[in-house]
Length: 173
Image (cartoon, rainbow, N blue to C red; front, top):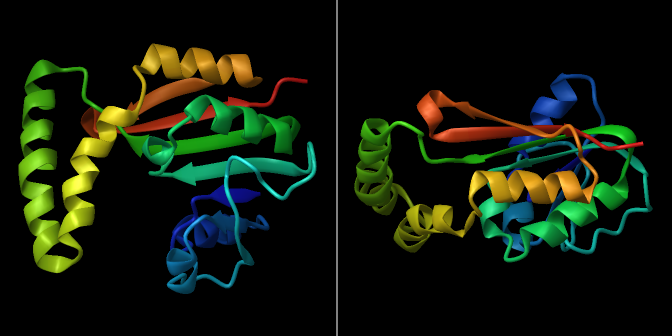
């Protein structure tokens, strides 16, 4: 299993607990240096993975889709490395469908989270976070592109009242 944009390795740890063998990949040397996982890690560009075609059983990516300038190229690259019948699980932020929940989420995510983040950590990173959601394409466009890449059964499920989305799919044969 590959965990792309693995950061500090949290999903790698979850994959290990599930009995899988993860390889964490991140572009940021700083994130890899701060990793807290015994899983093997490597620095690489997720758009040019140093992995053979069809060599992995699956891919996870947690809260990083919005950081890819070309999400279609990312989908193509994960389709290249995942074997036919292999699975993907992509987790990221979302906007709730409900207008009322969306307004509350926009206020919390846009105003409160950056202030809390500034108190506890890097204020610039937490100011970027709410803006980064805007980089995700509209869900139907994103799902169509994922289907075109070779995950014809891909589905999107909203979680946590619609503030998080889980995208699951199986690589076409």
